[in-house]
Image (tube, rainbow, N blue to C red; front, top):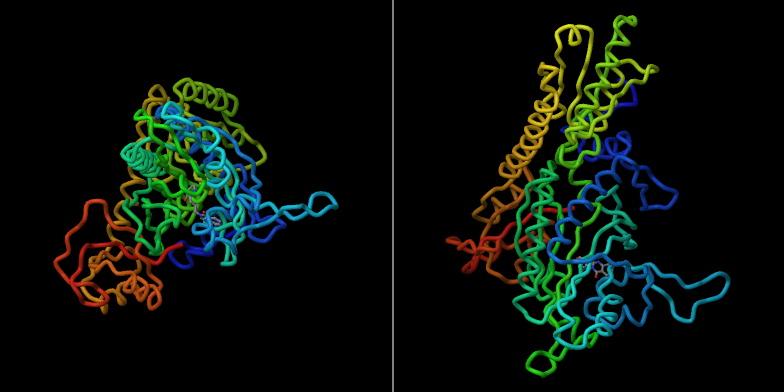
Length: 480
Ligand code: 87F
């Protein structure tokens, strides 16, 4: 096989397959900086789709986009000592400007709570100033020491971070859940990736939060991936930054806050979950090119007529809001083009050859199943729409099935270790609620509690670790 296409099998060496796919499909490129990647056309287009969808959603909920500086003075970052402590080793600093040393060094934002909340303190005086609901799309720098991987762990990445302040606890709680539901919709209905949702344990939550809610997906290699988080910050930051307001009762109160984020990590998840041995498979709802039309003529027979037909179909699809392109390049063979568009993950390919032309039909190939169907030329738009929907649904069901297959109910520690070793995935099991057991399991197996389901699943057995009475069922997994 030529080295243009993917040469590693997904089932044989998952990690190598992943790297090959993201590089060869035109998604990622390595950069001169260790741990920093280039987001190429194929991945940036998906990011823009995610932005489009999420912006629409949060605008509807009343949020507005803003942009804060990427530099955070050291004194400001250190104000929230408790939350900051564990993160110090990951912060990158600017210490010089031009040729002079800065008076105070500046952090390159690892997240923007501190700079945003210092500003909230200036903006908020009375209950009339609330709620504040803002969001920003930006880059983030965290100087990772662990091995990096395109999209999943890089020293610089892109995300959105939402920050809100409310006058009541209830309002903040609702905000956390509303955002979580919109995240879930993006992941499941658009990216076609099913997720488990729930709450982080004390040791896994964001230190600055009262409660961290999370969305977790399962990758084909049996490791979990955190897809997004939505935090209930309570009054924690209000206390540190002095964000107070005079309420309708004319008394002073601290605001209730939330913060939440999703990042370009989602693109990595999409590759892992849907990609195959021929490359990327992009779900139609986030594909910047949904359909590629390839005119096929042999020895120039009918080539003009075929080309005209291809243009006509292209126009027809575009008129019906289907994103299509016609690959009429003459310097490549149809076979080469098939491979190229498959590598890039375009959901549908329409072939138009002499026989199709003669029979007023189109040959359509699905990227997800490689199935080919013949459709009537006249029904191009309608049939294409139906097929795109089917592909979207099929990708989701396949991923859902994998998630279910990779979720195992385990009753004791022996079974826990055996399942983790042989199959990985989510281990649904009983837990006594103690951090000691959680820590012991992590030490011994590398698995952590990914989440506690929202609706407490009562446990009939004892804690998988200590054997004492369990309080609930939780989901463990090794994770990215
Ligand atoms: C790394 C270095 C410094 C995560 C860090 O989850 C600080 C941090 O605060 C840090 N890694 N975090 C937590 C981020 C919390 C929160 N921020 C808004 C989110 C979503 C978006």
